[in-house]
Image (tube, rainbow over all chains, first blue to last red; front, side, top):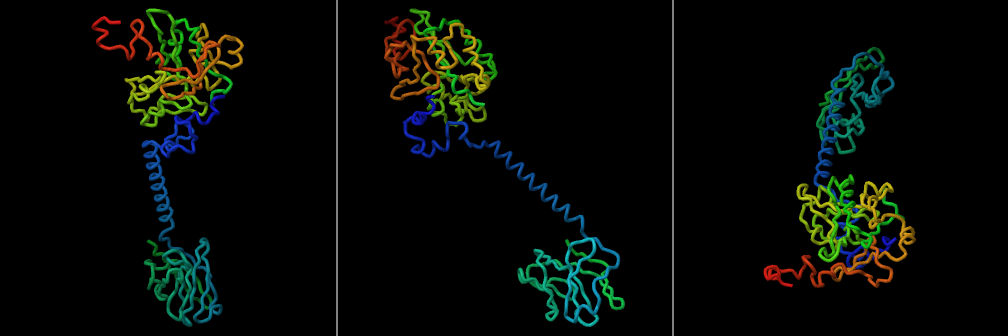
Length: 180
Length: 214
């Protein structure tokens, strides 16, 4: 068929590769035509913004579901003899996957906080000798006494675990979550 | 689905009897929305009843698409040049003026250029175009090449035309007498001939009209 003569498809008879750029930008053949009309572009913009809005709403909804919930009940965390003075132990509370950190500050003082930095969720390193929990990711630190941020990017305090010591055992009785 | 490659369109003006059947049938094609895309031209009405049906020749390098400032005239993969795309057509009439064969038509109420698209809804599923299916003398023939060569041994198909200095190669073929030397055929040769009868051409001027001239 005559369609296979490539040189006849352009007015000057030169092959497609030697044609000027505008001819390739505005091809006559339908399959090569990638022109996007204003309406298509507007539709793309509207649908994409809608998808973003839905996504943000979903994130907000998921975030607000577990907020501020005080866990009740007693749960065994460790026995006092397990942890030396200035030592620490990670643990989880039943029903969550969040890691928590138990630190023995002095002989009778125990504190426990969430181990995730409130900036970008890096695990914290306990530094009881400096009285802080240190985040190596962005040089952040939290006060070991209160769980409030001391330096670096974090702005929110750590969730604090309420502890109860009876006899030789350390129990967690609840989590005070200060998440915004 | 593309138009099958072995089926081709042949125009044989020698056989045209001017019955207007193609003109009527064309309007019934679904892609033409009730508008007829064919016009039946009289060669020299005072001299002869000879008519020529004008359908789109579907050029390899379509002049209508070349001149379109809005990038609206497109050709599908099977070489069929389609009507202007409605979202783009700006009804500027460039294609109507540029086409060597005078095929595109401006449908002013719709502000859209419409042209013969070889009844794309029919040919793309293997049927004949409306005009070829009704033509009683088969001046408009749609079918395989070997069939027309067998049926009309005294004609041969040509598909190269001269328009000024531009050589136009077309998908649709024109049947010419077998011995005739034309190749390529000059589309605008008639413009340079002496005007016969009342045909309007470049030779026509107000002077000839007033003076009752030639």
